[in-house]
Image (cartoon, rainbow, N blue to C red; front, side, top):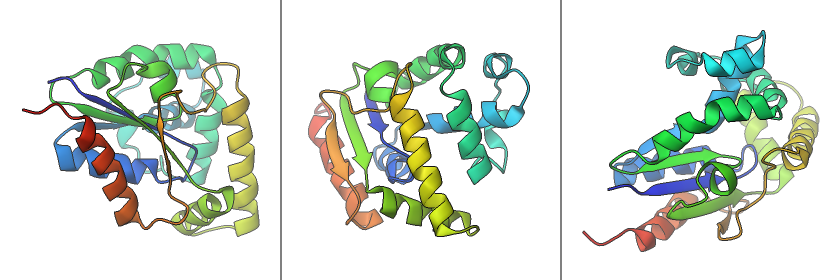
Length: 197
């Protein structure tokens, strides 16, 4: 069975946590597409060459969840050549047998416009900054909030595949939800679209 769940949204909205949990619950493969861009950004050098040569080992780097990696990802993700180099990898992953969950910023709009389920997970910038600040365990909250807002502006304003919900995406605002409640809401939405076996 091929069944794709596309989960998009801004940084620290909870899409990664939700995506991993949904994939585990339904036995689907999971791809955090942001890791692809983080890995490309952290490799340094020519980002297009880095994207074309990306390996599984690059995705296992321990520093890919750092604030530095997030900034690096946002910088290289605006490059159309980098996005093109990673496109086929993501599309092939999405249509694998057994189902797949992909999370990122342009899954429902560019990578998998035909996905069976599209969710757009969001939260207020203040809530997202607090989550990112607690996750990083360093720096000042005000600096993290400024970074979140700057990243939103870059992601939403880029010419190629800007961050925005697909027209048929279901919005899921996690600002006031616990992790458990957000996961449960997403799982209900996916279950409602699954073909009966």
